[in-house]
Length: 156
Image (cartoon, rainbow, N blue to C red; front, top):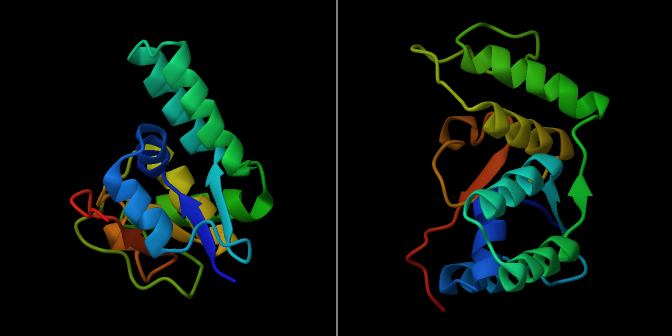
């Protein structure tokens, strides 16, 4: 069984029925019931905010709701996620951490957006592979999480 955490951009790709998202769905066997596929409450909030900002109508919002209902949502109010957040935030700011599985912090420090820190912490704590189309998590790949970068030019 594999565990996958879907980043916000993956949810958006599924909502838009983008060819690259369909490719990723099949490539990583996300429909296989033996795999656990979920998202973070942070991603859910991000995509709902995006729909609001862009003034999505009823039809698009119904499509979004259908996608969101396919995947369980993990809350970040869990001790393991909160602890992972603290370690990742400290480490990306260039300070050493007490978690001995982390290497010495990079210099210069790597700036991360708050939502990305929460998403990374969720991936790390849940030991799920993060599926994403952006490069914001590259410096954490192999450190505290496994990240698969999905190329939006991939087509079935």
